[in-house]
Length: 356
Image 1: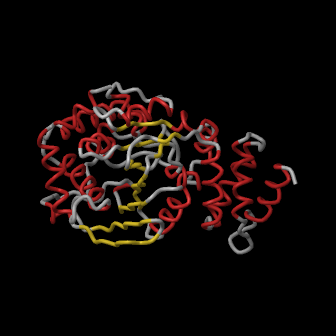
Image 2: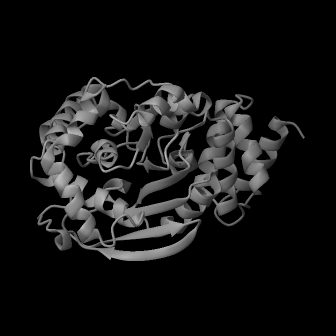
Image 3: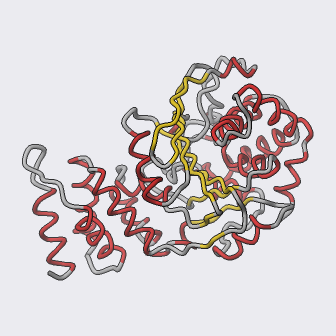
């Protein structure tokens, strides 16, 4: 069966309505996604495949198959570090709140944990403010090859890097225009943050979620992708930064085994806030203001790394503390927060951004 015949067969089964649609095997989903990445399938059938999978809800095998196809087409490099933190924020960005996690990698690097964060310029469903836009506002190079990103992480004065999807998986990035026409969230939004183009001796995935079903899904995908562990946090807009106002949840997994499910409370580490997150200023809302908003966020982030107290500082403090706890560098989130606070107050992490 050639690729076009396979997609024809798949679509016949997955796109027959809520009661009659059938699931496909891991291997079929992998080969179907491979055919799309190889540009062997026209845009109409590719879109039907993505929409129908979403409408019927993807099975774990289907998610794994699609993830495997993406990994097979992605460039990958081994980084000479013991533990590498992979920040898997949503590629579609932020549309309601200020992104804090763009500044998490340099902070982690200063704490002795090399980090990588990845993304792209803009994609559905949110078409929000992305890490790429913020790094551009900081005049950082955003189109690093995987080899250059590897060298940045191995450079002990930097210790972190952003890498764009256009550089590590050109075939997947070529689907952005199609995804933007589809508008709605697809399986690609679920799995693309788990590709992991850069790997240390041990690589740890840090992910955010909104819906309750996702922690075990993400942990299984992280294991299949080859991550040593995963930390899954109920975060603002699906990010790795939780609410600063109310209690939340995080799940710590090692090799897909749930090690800890912890209720987290920002007040326990001294965070007092009436708001869940920093709202986007009214005058900067909307797609047309993304570049101006990126400059605004860049200023807030650099000020926080320089030790300026506030909600941005608190968001960095909270997330970094959870990561230190997850890796058992500190016994409690409170103890971890004391270490993170000391680094933020020293303002030394800001040099890892300026070292471009």
